[in-house]
Image (cartoon, rainbow over all chains, first blue to last red; front, side, top):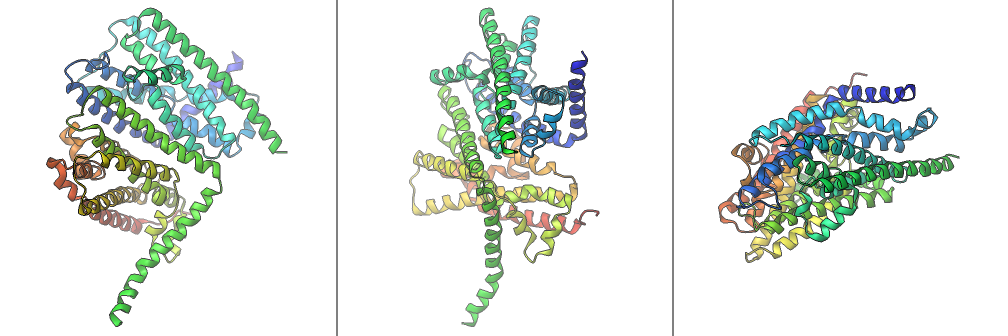
Length: 267
Length: 276
């Protein structure tokens, strides 16, 4: 157990830092709240203007989908990504190399530390939005909730794996803001954060199916709604696990290659 | 002759400001262009954001013919106007985002000792090259949108279009500058106010008729983002119910600039440097 204590203390420190920089955190929340409210209004108009269900979704289901999407998107903010890439860009990783810690594990601890706080704030904001739009239902079946929690945990792992890989590009480019913005744009559309993937035409859906992003929002949201049958759910959650593992391994590989490059450059 | 000379003397300060503004901005551009890869990455990311946004709207319209009576091209036009104006803001006036840091660290002193308007120096303080990507794709979308309008394009109408886009961009920049002036009051390494206000622009991506009256009042009267996208779009497409308000856009732009400059000046009087 002692092996992990250093990571736990890193996570705690990271959470404390978030408390100290409450203003920055609030900024991040504010950044998403208008966007979420606009999305709720947009979809409300679309659903109330349409006589039948759209893409197999009813308006109450869509509300739940949007809320779950917002909650998952609020976890692990861009701070984790920003800090990681700034550490690389400004050379602070040199200190990390000297520490008796695994770099990826230490970054994971730092990224996961603030999760309780992020979840709590997102739930508060989500509850307010949900109330304004006439309430949002919990899963009818408690089993769905359990499966959803598993899927959401995997989604967070995938997100970390992705963010870690993207941060590694800071070894090669200093334009990390652009890389981050680009990732968020692609992620928003292909994860299903903006629109359920069933709304896509076939070719786009096929593309989304082979990308890791759907495991970040779409899969957990669909488990929450209980929209997939048993075997499909199992398959999709298995796929999430595969992507999470794959991305974490890819990140390790990138780190190894990058550190070698840095050593060569540094003489 | 004497009159012309007097006019020239009067114009000279304004000309000088514009000249100095571009000199300051030019230095920032050089600094960024030194990192070629960054420049490319920023451009690509801006285009990516637009493409995915467009894909989102397109997918919705694959399912439904209109949103509350607004067609695909009308919504695309609103989107495009938001992106073009945002692009103008980041390409030419990104410096507003640095104001709170300058004030907090006391680096704003540097600006005050130079014999150039502080506002000009702040505006020219940084360059966001992602703006170029936003402007190019945004203008392209506006062009395609116009090709899909049902109205006849007379020279007068085209002129009005140019004025509307320029006014929309002015409103956006003025809102940014005005909210950035909050730095003089907030005194933190970065002020939340500009981001808060900036994000209100999210509402302007869609027709305002989908919102409750409270939200509408917020983006029409309080922070007039609706004049950046919605009202100009209504005019461009000749939507009778809202076109008249579209013509108010230049006036709103002037009002926003006056407000922003006033806020900046009031704030400036409070500036007391940092305590070192």
